[in-house]
Image 1: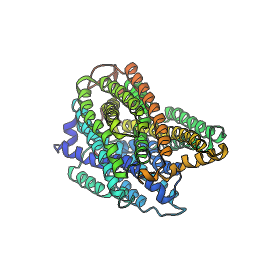
Image 2 (image 1 turned 120 degrees about the vertical axis):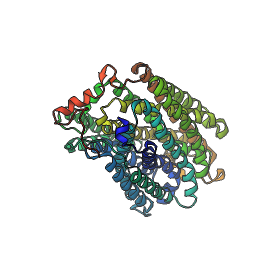
Image 3 (image 1 turned 45 degrees about the vertical axis):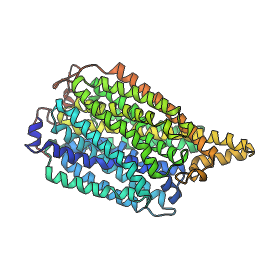
Image 4 (image 1 turned 30 degrees about the vertical axis):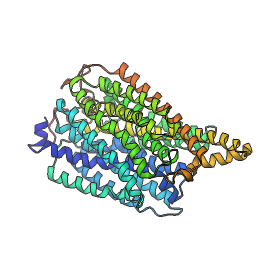
Length: 535
């Protein structure tokens, strides 16, 4: 299978091309987090506004990944990777050109959405190309390299971001352009050959999932401003959840659906997506909150905050390679369960040290947290995609990435609400202790909690000690919640996954392509054994 897909071309060159293609999406997840305080100050954004600048990207990814995966399978993976790279690079350039003033927030949020759309088109197609290029028994190692090297490039993000923000934060977006040019050149040289099948596009499903994802996350995001007593908060969350349920029911009855939901009948695929969904509540948010903690509580510069996050990736990249080899030899259960448990312990121990305001006491627990997520993310994603028919790799990737980015976006919104709420409570107490009347203290605390006090990177002398400490306590609350989340993911993996490496043709006693192929039959699509044209 792999040899025919590559047509004798170098599989390593194809892998390199796909790594550079997706590297932009990985770099963007961390490099923006480093620049958040500077972007917030220069553009005059509120705390919620700057969270939207981060979350709009994740929302677009979550809402459109299923569409991107389906599009890749029906139009051609190489075409979609190329188009996605071009869209992503163009949107990055426009983010870097964000004007100051009243237009700033709308401008940067809009083009972050366009960036997310480009990533959603690109990523499922790129991962599908890697999966089709390598045989099943080599796939764990190949995808460990895919996620590990991309993760390594992500690790460069904080360091590069810290350096670039000393010049201008706008350069953190412009850096994507040379990466895109390298990716396009490698795609042109390697010319990856993949299979696809033409089919109708389910635009009704696209509207339902996009609206459901956006509304549910919007409700959680706004809860820190509106409050939980405001009926708008509950209505937005409930409406979003209801639309997602409607989406599932509609997809069950659609001949050529956006997502072939019958794939969830494959038990390991379902379990891996639950594990990924739970774990991703922490994975992207940890960069955002750790960066702010380093620049506010520890009063580090942006470049020093980059070093702070680098420790996380030291653990992540090393463990990702070990986890991929464990997947090939022993199956997904061991690395996934071990990784979740390690991350839970790491977050818990890290939380216990953040209020000491000393980086030296935290570094090993930061590495441990990164290693835990490195162990489990690659194997869980690979094992989930392996369960699909090879003509549905793009769609399966689209599903897993939809789950990952939706829950990451939810995590940022929910944990952000926890941070702001805890920060507001701590600041109120601190301001009262300094002699302010309760009413005024509460008003000042609400303002400071939303603005983050304009702190970050200004040196210890420019940030009041009580503010630094209160933010550290708020961060501690977030990290304790993250530890609990990863403990839940560990429990799901232990109870839901089975031991042993996956067989080439059978998964959990079921034909891996059966659930998908049977759903395609009514739409006139070829079965897994068909030979549609290369794309």
